[in-house]
Length: 427
Image (cartoon, rainbow, N blue to C red; front, side, top):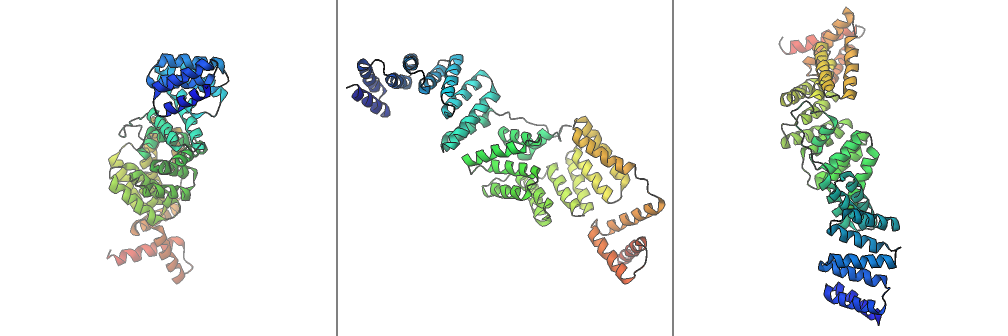
């Protein structure tokens, strides 16, 4: 007879007839007063009717009769949250987890409790653990819900891109993605060198939601940092296919393409990024770097100049322009740019970049060429200017001259090529 009452109670609860369910469970408990599941399910019915105190009473009786069952603790913890008894609720959910360390709803509930108590990082850790367990159980809907809670809890800083901290590594990465705080924190993690954990986090996000374009973009940025440029490009391609049209995806794909030697593809990406965000100094610097890597120093300098018009205190633009000037043998300009970059990095306490600039500056300043070397540098600089900064063109002209008139000094060939070009231009 008690079994019939119990199963009728379950059926009525499934039909959302909670009052009828309570009647059936009560009848069941009259026959079997030590039936823990009867108290548990009557408590659930009370909870769904909003009778929270009666629910807690039934859950407590369930725990007394079955102290090894996690369900009673979890349900009482949930009810105590409604009653704003957060310490009691936390005790219950901790016990539920001790009894079953793989029970995802308990971690999710503990995340909610810790959020209400103001322990945000602890809340995030619990929601993440719940998401991982839901994902393993193929419960993608619950996994996504936990991920949303994580994203909501992450800070959403608003960096002032005109300030002297524009190149601070953390703020720059925020600018790089222009997305929510959770991805920003993953990028900060990668910036500190923990790229493996950042990739692992992004992988489980994409397992839960393979259509998350922001996650693909973020993973592409991390893979670029790791030097995995082809995999990064694949991620950027996927983000674009999912209609992620932020300029950052084109800028970073352009950087990866440039480093792989695909200059044409890189330029197409940088130009597209500038169409979307024409006042982004980072895009001009990235395109300038691509020009510089291909030997086109004059166009590189022009892009660095444009970046500095937008953000006059942007240290990477000075630093990279200094490199381009050094490649053109314009050492005075290179020194001035390195000094300016070092000063800004020092202000920002960005010591890694500061020391990197100082190393280049020291190499330039300690170089004391003899007059013959100075003459050679001047000729080389003059020829580079005449061929638009493309040294490969200059070298081809020199090789042709050497083949036609062998046995002369290298400086002589430089001078002859310069004169040929100037005569051809009517000078």
